[in-house]
Length: 509
Image (cartoon, rainbow, N blue to C red; front, side):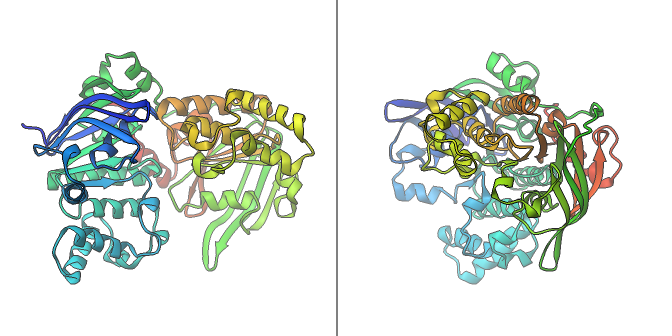
């Protein structure tokens, strides 16, 4: 079968540095080709170059033939017609891809009318048809992005991408920030679109479970070059390159086993009948939990289960009823100095760090706010924290955009432990990281907790990560803890927990 897309010796540079070097691969109609590799390997740069979405400073050479036409040689006006018409794009973060001030229906209508000479009424009918195609009710047509869940937003983005029946769909990390059940639904949707519409899919991902579940072939990239390619089964079962073996060895597997039972007799965090309400909506209902010193409690559940609302209550940022104490002190009564006993590590390190502040200033911020350290003493503490998270002091004057994803997350961790907290709340701290960086960050978490003995509330939708790190697990569903303990993975009792575990992806072929 002839190739729908043929990428031939493509190289991309930014100034004097090379991001992609002589990359070649092909994709046929109805095929799913996954491009994998660590952050900085060049996979997203390669994909963005196909649609002319790189900044003006980028220089591109080689050929990218779509139906025999070289995308790199097309005039700007013709390339705009290709984008969204012949090639659809699904971006990693749907909330950023959608305009917050327009309804999702109006945005789908616009995607249709840009490429089709149809009336607004005809475009509206097409938009409603697309909503049904991606499994959303027609009532969502008038909803704004902030009124929808992450899974629903990703479905809207996919509806816009296939609005004009493209022959090629580029999906850049389409399931990274989604919980396991929604991830399974989105992958099922992509599979269904491929089968029903014959769409070829170029899948950019760091999630090997997604590759095993959806892709037919895989291209492995490292340092801007293709190091291995072949059918998924062949590459996963018999990788030729050490780099590919390293990627696969870094993947955490989810096993039906009980977590080791250990005693943590010194409770740091105590929640008693905690509830959080927004108007008439109750997000958290009568939750009671404890976390001991040196213990990690994994908190899992789908989007909307109440995980973030519960974390907000613990930090004192969200109003609650019930009782929450950290090291014996009521959270609601903690003043600024007391809040330093709680450290926070956020999901997206780039958005949680001030883009105008250097690494040193970001790490020093809690020390400046809560201690009297200044000058050389402050600089020495910052260097000590950089060392604790295994970052070179030479990075202290860099800005967030000059760091890799893993380095930025280490800066976030250094800032979170700057005041030697009793409790650390980690909210999806590894979801945006590739597998090898994720493994190193988890090892860092374990090492820091062993040395500093903080209690940790680890919130994640990645069940394998939770099993790898946690001492106990609590499952949250519709604001309530439905299951808790060390045997959640070995013998889940609640039907909701069983459904979560059944939805988790593995790399088995």
